[in-house]
Structure formats: structure tokens, C-alpha cells
Length: 306
Length: 330
Image (cartoon, rainbow over all chains, first blue to last red; front, top):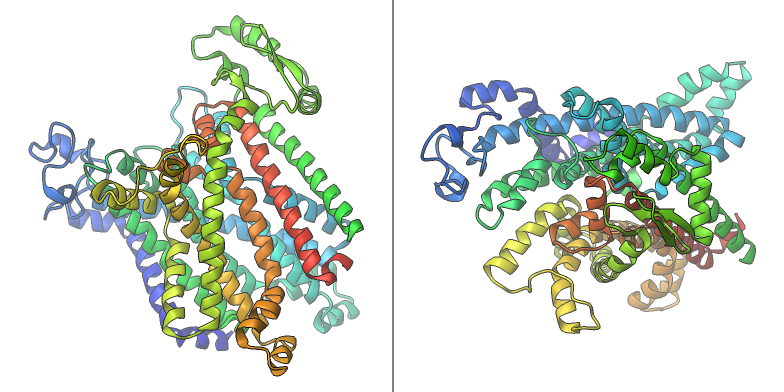
């Protein structure tokens, strides 16, 4: 463990990536504070309330999407909201969905993977079959198709869906398919671990199955879990943005990167700036996470050292 | 090999059957009432009840599924919202009340777009992706490797919905270097077909190629130091011939498997790419069907996508078994 931290500390790219990720998390946590200091909020229609910001066609009057000292990243065409605070609160949306989904995935994946890996036999066959079926589903299409269906199940038509429910639906849909790769990796890990001496020794002194799984096997699988989490998290962030881009996902007025891109695509030729900000933000975020993921893997698995 | 082939084919068939049952249960049995959606917003309760009866939705779910499977194998007659019968030949995937045509017809008319896009993207993936991985591995640590690895990282991080619009703005709208993306049947005008699909194929290919470049680089680096490769070099084979003949064969298995998955996924429709570039392929059909709550089309496209994935993953497994005798004996 210490050796791994040491390897990681000497990896300069990994440290920079970690700083960028930490910066994003900090921005998300401090969003209300930053917005208060900056003096704007993500929901107010500044462009419509103040004259001279938007043209009659709804486009920002100032060049570069209306960037100015008052509106650092410009204003949204049409509704005239502030881009900077929308992006800022968008981090919260993305991170909330992604971290919650990853947490559920980690719990499900570890529980299923470790149990099945230890039990083997019939449980293992059933597990492999279910995984094969789930892996063959076109994930994005299924996310796309499932979210509205799950929503209509719990919300009466005509009624607005509360925000917490939108988040829950997204998290559940992502988790329902996300646990598969993690559980499959852990199953393989545990299958080889269970033949090792320390497990045999525990069995020899009469340890219960429960003890072996919880106390002997579980502490040894954190490395693949950590690697999987750093890979899965940016994947969920982009999938969430893709859903919003395609028209399902978190709805107005909660700020969302994917929906900003979708709105940006409608006015792209007249006001490309509005799309560049969320596009570059997602790129930076995912890039930092990919670099971090590489470094974590390198630190934990000496074979893949670059 | 033959027993492996039979075992793998059976396995694929069972997985497909399970997928069709799951998809059916998810979309038909669950929440939103297909009759309400098919009938439209203007229907009252009695009309909805009539539609439900004519669509067979009042029957138990298992009977409905049996109907669906029977329709796929032997064809069946489906009644329209007003009760007029519609013949649906095998393989019948149901009837779309939103598009007013059988789901299979809707898919087949759009499939050439998806097929062209998948073919182009696949060419980019194989040439640029796997090629870049090869060159990177051979030039490990040198500037070429650094540049290629940087590009790969960019490809793995950038999103099609951003890159697609950005390039369309720069290369089509501002400079006019690329033709406006669109689909012309290749039989009509081969040049226009290629020109209209060039940018979408490059974007879709670039984003997906990154994964292949990383995997092939890692695989090659691992296999390069195996004993049998060193033996080949020791016997006096040139480095290039050694790598082409021995290293690549040893490194191929995971690449072939990933390629199988990728081909299957591409043929199921490129949802985002088709939306970004306004191409009406199977992916766009699926996205529109979801937005309009057109359940028969959703189920049809989900099944089609799953079918391609299952078939090509199985094919990839066969290729791997052919490459590596250890697999087929396991």
C-alpha cells in the first residue's frame, strides 16, 4: 500500500490529473459560494430581464457569445442565463449522478463478484449467463429507452417529476448495467485468491464462510475496485451528458452539461461559443480522469508501467 | 474445432432468446401503456380499451411474448389502431403505430446508412487505431510514441457530440474543405456518397480508434518480450518480419475480441453520430422512437443491436479459437 502511494507520488502526470479532478470537486462543493461572490445564479434569465444583452433573435449582442466582465463565459442564447454559473452547477449534476452510480456499482459489483467467485459451481454458471445477456444489450439505447419508462412508472402523467427522483432514476439505470464488468473482474480475482494459502489456512482453523468472504477475501480486492471506479466514473459522466444531449435525462431548470450542448447545437452556426464552454469542460474533466485512471493502474499493477 | 463451434453457436442462440424476453418484459409488461401511446393523446377510455384489445394487450404477457416470437419465426397479422388487419411477414418485429409501417421495413430502409457509417468507421479503427498502436509499441518512448499516445488520449476523452459539431463548424461551415454530411445511396452517386460520409466516419472512427490503439500497444509490448519472439529474432529474422509473423499473432486475441464487440455495436446504430450529423440511420430511428415513445420500434432496434453484438462476439470467439488452440480445448 505504501509502495503504491510512493509510485503514485513520483508520477507527475498522475499528480497533475489528481489536482484537476480535486479542483472540479472543489468547484462543485463551493458552487453556491462562488456564485454568490460572482453575483449571479444559474436560473435567472438575465438576457431577458436586462435590455441590450440579447438581440431580437435571442442571440447575445456582444461578440464571442456575449462574454464580458459581467458575464465571464457569456450568456445563453434565447433564455439569457449566465453560462459560468450554469457550468459551475453542471459539475454538481454530473458528479452527483456519477458518484452515486459508482457507489452503487461498487457495492453491487463487490457483493456479487466476491460471492460468486468464492462459491463457484451453479452460482457461477448462472452469473456468467446473466452477465453475457446484460453485456449484449446496447447500453446507451437501453439507458435512453429505460429512463422515461421508469419515470412514467412512478410519476402520474401531467405531474412534474421531483428532482430527486430524476437523479435516482438515472443512478439506478446506470448501476443496473454498470456492475457487470466489475463483478466479472472480481469473480476472476477471487477465484485465484480462494486457492491461496491464507484462505486455506483460515478454512483449516474452521473459519466460517462469512468470515472468509468478509475478512480474508474482501480486503484483497480493493485494488481492482479502485481501478474500475476511476475508469467507470468519467464513463458515467459522459453517458449522462449523452442522455441529456439526446433529449432524456435531467430536465430544466437543473443545470446540465449535456443539455447545454444540445441547446448549443441548435444555435451552433450563429453562436459557437455557447457550445465550446461545456464541450471543453467535459473534455478536460474526462481527460483528467483518464490520466488519473492510468496512473492509478500503473501504481497498482506494475505490469502495465508505461 | 467443430464441437467448439456448435457449443458457441448454441450459447449465442440462448443468450439471444433471453435478451428478447428481457427486452419484451422491460418495454411491454412494464409501466407505460403502449395502447395509450399508439392511440394518441386524443383517445378516450373506450377507444383506448378497443386499441388495447386489437393490439392483444389484454392477453397475458406470456401469450403476447409467444405471439411476438411466433411472428418473428412465421409471420403474423397485426391489427392497426382502428382494427384493420396488417400482414407482417416473417421475420416480423411488430408494427410501428407512430411511423405507420412495420418495424422491419423501417429498419431495412435505414440500414444502408448505418452500414456505410460502420464500414467507414471500422476502416479508420483498423488502419489508424491498430496501426497507431503498432507504431507506438515499436517506437516506445520516442517522440512518435509520445505524439501518438497523446492523440490516443485525446480520442479517448473527447465526446462525439462536441468534436462532431466543432469539426462540422470548422471544416464544413467555415472553410468548406469537407462536403456537407449526408447520405446519398452509393448506387446513385458514388462520389457524393463518399463525400457526405467522410467526416462522420472519420469522427466516429477516431473516437473509437483510441481504445484499439491503447490495447494494441499494451498487447504488443507484453508479447514482444515472450520467449518465442526472442527465439525468432535469435534465428535471424528481421524485426519487422518477426513482429508481423509472431508478435502480432500472439497479441491478436484481445484485439479480435474487442473488434467483434465494436463491429456488433457499430452495426446496431451510431446513436450520437447519426444525431450530430443528421444522418437517418438505425441509430437515429432508435433515438426518435424513444423520444416519441414508439415502443415496437424501440424493442425492434434494441433486439437488432443485441443481435449484432451477440453474433459478432461469437464470431470473434471463433477467430480467437482458430488463432489459439488453447482456447478451444478449455
